[in-house]
Length: 455
Image 1 (tube, rainbow, N blue to C red):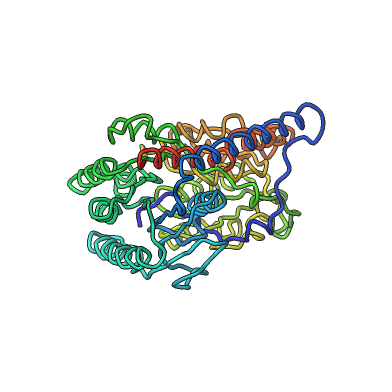
Image 2 (tube, one colour; image 1 turned 90 degrees about the vertical axis):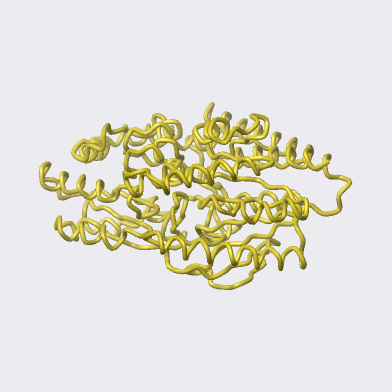
């Protein structure tokens, strides 16, 4: 699938998690943290009360979320949205694909009804994508009809990619009067260009599909200000119907754990990458940086771990072998949360090698904010939204320069005081601005607007 926000990690239940500690437990920093949390609580209460007041006349507020690119609850953004809505009185159903550790056709998780369907293996060519998307639409129609009869819904909340779910939304909007929310996780035209290196007929088709999806939407949700601009300019949405809901870390899940030196394999330092392993994620660039660290800088005291799965995993492993990096790089595949947070807690530096492109420049990466939530300094290429998210918690590399990327990693490894300062900045920024609780306020406001329009 064409996807950016695919989260290739398993999940523990939120109530089993230990909340990550904020930077600084005493003095002004602690007071600022508590003040920020209080402000979020107040805004959440206000948003919830406003939404409730709009719908007091309705006995049921029913939402159907459709997502194609990842099973729930492993799509962290979708699960956070669904959980927030459920906690504030909505009846939530979800249609999503099956996947590893998510093979049941139906589950009721914390009161949320999750319906999963089969999909063919991720497509690589035109025929592959056609088979994948056709199967997805078939099951989305079949399961939505089942949900309409058994549970009912008032709203379809469509999470791209691909920009085809509007077909289901249009059916229910025009025949049954259902509302339609477009939750734009990816900008598909830019994603296509990043994946295939060209535009052409299919690119133009994606621009058209995106435009039609926005035209159908009663309300749209953007993950950042860059995506909001696309909704206003390409999508021609009314500004008061576009809401920014950032994919911030859920602090009930992200937690520090005791470090495990076994991940360092006897070396002094550990550098970690967590996320999708696809072409646009730039793992080949990271491997070239590692080769530079060992070959040009003659450093053999740094171990690297790459956590996650994706369509390019086999190719990345082959490149690691060709560069003779097998001993320096550990590939874990998908791991559970305990393993994930142990690795990140052990890491000295975290890497975000997303390849510079129009898509990555405008996209907010979940992994960056998870690194920040755990107080880890970051090295990444200089992209607009990456800098907006990370600020002073990251060093930035220009023009996909892999040698400079490697040198920046070493620069941080050799300066523990700077690492601590950058990590503290990032952690505080997550608590103050980026955590999911802040996004939840905007999500509830979007739904208030939607139900205002319905009445």
